[in-house]
Length: 194
Image (cartoon, rainbow, N blue to C red; front, side, top):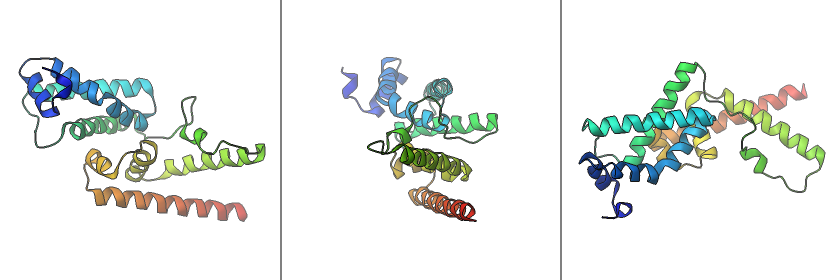
């Protein structure tokens, strides 16, 4: 029996019936997407790894207790568990997710790095720094959708599933986030001119 060819539903039943390989296959199938979605929110490898492990401990406990609702799909369910654990982490830390510019990979470094003068580079770097600061000032629901969409390259359907809201709500939060960013940028430009 080739586990790679089995559906999520079948793999869950393989695991529940006592074969650990069913769960191993599910983890292998989705670990990259789940870990990435956690990492994009916490921006720390150690914390992301801890939350990833905690996520699968909850998955195992739920499956073993027979409480998994098979109407939902496995990936959105696990991602929602991970998302809730991220929220719990930030509640404990009493801070919101931040876009930091540490030594790690930075999406802004990849954008438009070609044929620019040192002055252009300085302006670009300051603009990105300002943008990150403004994103940090957004309400948490708007910041979350913006990060998932632009940094996580997630679809609005996935964002809606993970945050447990409708697609329209996710779209609305994105629209508000972009409008708020635009207003904050205009206000910043006005204060620089005065």
